[in-house]
Structures are given as C-alpha cells and as structure tokens.
Image 1: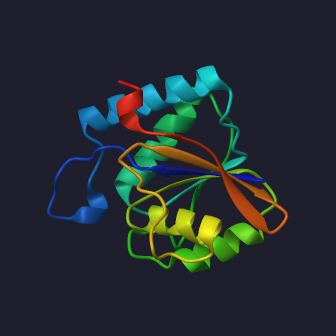
Image 2: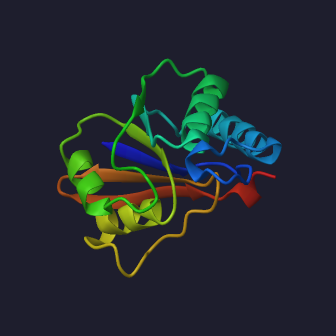
Image 3: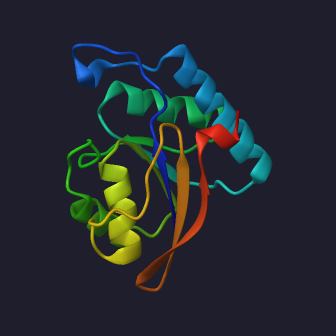
Length: 154
C-alpha cells in the first residue's frame, strides 16, 4: 500500500486562515507537480484525502483534474496543521488502498516521521509547499519511495 503526502501549494494571505485560496503561484506549482507526476507514472492514488482548509481542497481538486484522475476527493478529519499525526497514522494502518493526502505543516512532516520512525519527534522530513512524498507499507513497516520538492519542477 502506498501513501502520497502532498503539502498544499502557495496560498494568498488572509485574516481567515481556513479560507485562504491558492494564489496564482500556487496554481502554477500544482500544474508543474501534476505534469511531473503524469510523466513519471509514479502517482496512482485510489482516493485523495484533504483537510477542510480551502487551500488543501483546491490543491487536491486541481491535482486530480490535471492528472485526469477519476478518484474520490474526500474531506478527512484529522488533517489540519496541528492535528495529531499518530491518529492519522492509525487511520492509514487500517487502509488497504493507495491514498494521497493533501495537508499542511507541521502535521505532514510529523505524519511521515511517525510512519517511518514510529514517532513524530524528531521530524525526519520537511514538506515544502507543493512537495510530494511517497511512502510504501510493506508488512508493518513503511519506507520512503520518492520525494519531489517544488524547486525541482521549476
């Protein structure tokens, strides 16, 4: 089973953090990531989970549209920036299908660390905006498959 962790793309500044939409720069970041993932053939989620924050939902929807994916986009509780990564790791343990998670820092880096090292601290990964990290579960253990940072796609 694979999990793809994707941090939302660049968003506009706003007083209401939850309502911040993607910026033009963020839209271009998602397009570049989608182009790369499509060409690589290395991205095959069966479902995309996203947080309730606008920038996460927009990143997930644009990525799916640009890749031509016909998979469910699911608002998933537990993906906000300060949510418990251990709880999300438990949900993934029960999941049998490949899932892409579009979320936020510091939760995504902590989640990757929990999956790989069994604990959130010290953080083993840093997720830049519009970065993607693929992890694979083999038995009870997770290992890193690939990591794409946005500056590699420019």
